[in-house]
Image (cartoon, rainbow, N blue to C red; front, side, top):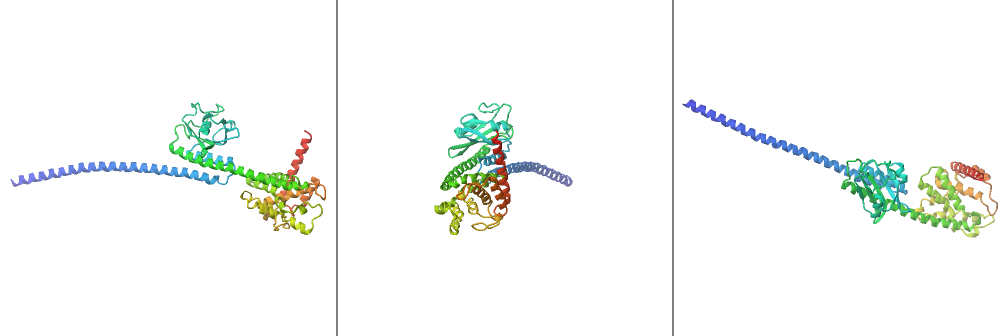
Length: 420
């Protein structure tokens, strides 16, 4: 009887243990299932976080591109240069290979200033009146237009059916300064399938606004520059007009100085400054008394010392004008000699600003080939020989050689014209 009871207890314990095992197995299975689900959720969250991180990184890169545009465009004075940077930046932001920037010409037409991924035919022939086509409407309304399919949109104008864009999706954004539209930025989607997002539009709009400000500032600067130039040109001509023997001297000096600077392949800004320096190099003579400036007899030593102050006076006139501050040193030192025996400071060789060295050659040549109170104008051949004699002493040898080449080219052109 006791054995049976024991067996029963053992069986009960076994069954209970088995039940516990089954219970814990089921519980663990649910736990494992929940752990698996949790792992999936964690993996999904990690993937989303990675995507968001990549998205933020891309956004930072895009914003950095816009910032880099602002840095790269700083100091540029050419609309073409700024427009090229805008187009390159827009393509970088959208990852596109085709874009164009259009400005408004004097005939109230949009023309392409810079482009990427477009044929030369489109670039050269495209002229769109305000209000016509997509870009024309954007320019006239000041609102962007999104084109889902270029090939089927009747608003899109293309000069030649054979010239096709690389994608069908297209957006045109105005370049505005306040309420004034100064141009239009057009961008193609990188693929036929991808459409522009709100973020794309916002980023391109930010870029377009930055570009509009840059281009408008260039326009204002150029207008101000033209005003200053006309003012100083009038003053330089007024000084020349005081002396019948130096009439048009400033204009001739300007012409030759520009030709020399261009021959030397100098940057546009430096060419312009040298041109201005040549035009204004004698502006300091406004402070020299007429009885010295117009004297027909030989100047006394004292009078000559007074005349030699005209570069210093010219520098004092130009240096305070920010627009002409880089021109002032060229005016100050245009009477320096290459060997250091000139005035006002006795500079030599490369110590003398390049513009001043150019003006020195032009000034001497024009003086020799102009009628003076004490002699008639020297023949060009004689003046050239004098420049050669002064090469390395009074003048920079390289500049003398370049100027003589220009005179030879000028002579050949004149000889050709005689027989036409």
